[in-house]
Length: 67
Image 1 (tube, helix red, strand yellow):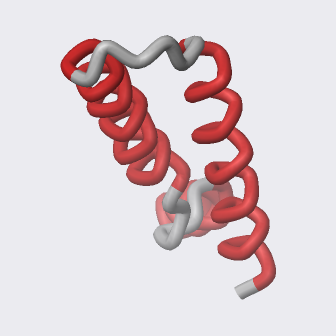
Image 2 (image 1 turned 180 degrees about the vertical axis):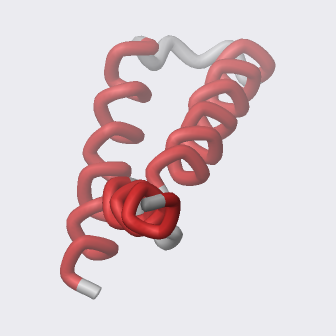
């Protein structure tokens, strides 16, 4: 009975799920972009930065799903 529960748990959470890692990396990219924006005194809206990063995340997610 314990083996059945373990197998169900393994199926529910695949070991190759990269979503948390990618999300953490992209959060770092957004943070660095904010800092560079301030340092360079650029007027790039934060929403534009976040939109670009989210679109990149979606592309990476789609590519990982295909693989």
